Amino acid sequence: MSAIPILEARKAQIHQKGAEPFDITCGKHSLAGSVSQRACVFCGSRVVLYPIADALHLIHGPIGCAAYTWDIRGALSSGPQLHRLSFSTDLREKDVIFGGEKKLAAALDELIDAYRPKAAFVYSTCIVGIIGDDVAAVCRKLAQDKGIPVLPVHSEGFKGTKKDGYKAACDALFRLVGTGSTEGISPLSINILGEFNIGGEAWMIRKYYEEMGIQVVSIMTGDGRVDDVARSHGASLNVVQCSGALTFMADMMKETYGIPYIRASYFGIDDMAKALYDVAAHFSTQPTVMETTRRIVRREVSAIMPELYRLKGDLSGKRAAIYVGGAFKAFSLIKALRYLGMAVVLVGSQTGSKADYATLQEMCNAGTVILDDANPLELSKYIIEKRADLFIGGVKERPIAFKMGIGFCDHNHERKIPLAGFEGMLHFAREVHASVTSPVWQFAPARKLAGHREEEFRA
Image (cartoon, rainbow, N blue to C red):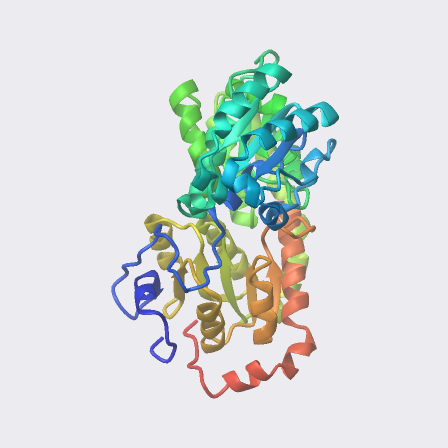
């Protein structure tokens, strides 16, 4: 730790287990000059709402904001593909001076007529917050004229952190809830919150629950549909995976409609099984649900374990670094890597809470570095110091891994292979194995340099 220079104002957001009493700062704005890996408020709202496939998504701002977030989730749809089109009002200097409300109204009028969406989301960017366009008023007028929900997303990028973008998205999405009919919804029913169907995971998870005898009313927001969200208040339980993104929605639905919720993770054997068992336990008045769930888990685990054991033979003792958006995902990754015999030497997130980091600290080995809102320099230096063999992160972390000469596993928005569910655990293990054991890394200069500079990690 001492050999790595860090900005003085960043020290409170970095902790090494065992070096000092645990006390980490989080939830604060990114430090100016630290080139944070964290995204802005606007980006946070986009990653939540983007997968709603039959809605129009219009960005009110400069064209660069639309380019930055185009196809950002890479979410798959079983039907409409409207969400994959990127629309922007393309605000320019004249619009900044004289206002962009007329341009927004004209864009909405044209796009709604052309694409006939079920609803429209309008995202406010930084410049809109500065010039003061009344986006909500424009949306109300267009909703009245066109007869569909036109929902403002108050996501000006400078307003806070990425997590504030999640809240802005949930505020907009919640306006759809309760507007549809609940006819035909079973007492054994759930909404899945925080699953974004990056590689088809939502379809796999829905299949598990339906085999258990549970009706899935809506998925928010992977392969999402406006009509499903509108009737989601008829479900008996909300199951929240991405705790940072959709807990706001679960809290609002609990307060307004009395729907309880549980937290779940669909990544890794233990957490996937627990997600199914917890739902079965909630519907304990139907004992056949739990019986069926046990049968599903036994079948799925027995199918993947032989290959996992084989891959573990090559991976035991290898070291991994993790940097993801939400800390809840990191919990599951640590457990999954242990199944493969790997140790986690660095773990961090963009939006973790103090409680999340306390849990990470308990899960990690002595010497593990825990980071909040890291920057590329910190990540690079700690990867070298801790002699990581693998970096698990997103698109912004990939170049860091390759520059440091180590393997990389994409566990974020851009991947096309499902990593959730029991089958997904096998996909993950194969990807980790192929990356870590590749002979190319022996030629990386950074790896050769690391040998005499780093202390052995205490596994």
